[in-house]
Image (cartoon, rainbow, N blue to C red; front, side, top):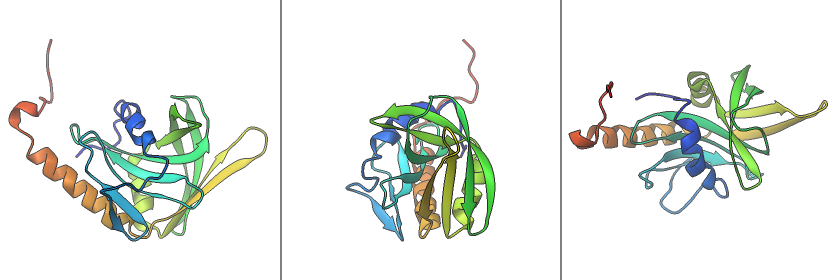
Length: 179
């Protein structure tokens, strides 16, 4: 499976962001504080919505098997622009770059540009917080439980693997094409 194809992520953001108001939906499976859903053939998701209504989730495109992490801060930003975000977990901290996605409703979702770094944090920590600088000297911070994240991510990724392996040969695209 491929991870974080930044060209595909913005296209998936529209579907992903439509899930923001109430990440948990009918058909979701629950793992600890996290839930996962593979009912939509366009996008698979495993994530959490915190008590403030912000979400942290991994989204995967079943067709390409590309996955990405997105965080909802409840902020507006310039689509396509990169923003520094401090990621702080009980296992350590790091500064990562996030890419602003399309505006859905009154907010934009930010996509982690380094899938592997985000995956390491989500899979190794018990809780995580994200802080993004705002204009002036303010920061916006959001926090999430990671209880159940490994189980939810593994189940969602296993379903992704099953779907990608059983896709008819005619539906699979070649690794290279010449036109």
